[in-house]
Length: 163
Image (cartoon, rainbow, N blue to C red; front, side, top):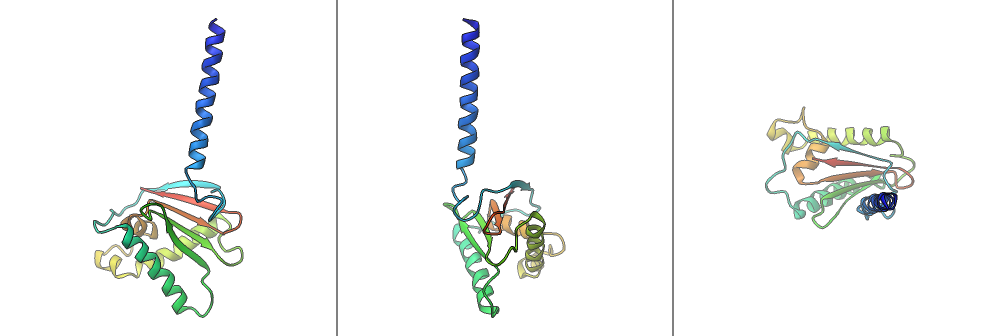
């Protein structure tokens, strides 16, 4: 009887582990729709605090402004699309639109370095005197984004949880 109980316990434990892992995998409903399943994830501990006025509306306005500026200022199609998803637009997604732009962790980090340079030139960073310290990921935190996914739009995706 003892073997039967321990056997049932093992089966129940395995089933519970399977259920937890399948729930975790299904938690990202945008994977395999906007981007492939992320190859890896990491957590960024932001140096910035969320702005009190950060809201769904302000996140959507930010993305709309960035995309409109890219389209307006450049005579060529944008190299990537930026959009927000989630009930509160708390998930920032960047998908490459041309070639193999962001098909590796190194190219994705290079893109984040470029976006950091752009963020550091903003009045917000200059007024707060953090333009030499904060990064694009800190700007994401300030705006209330909780998750950033960067993808080449084909086979590579990487996620960063922003805390």
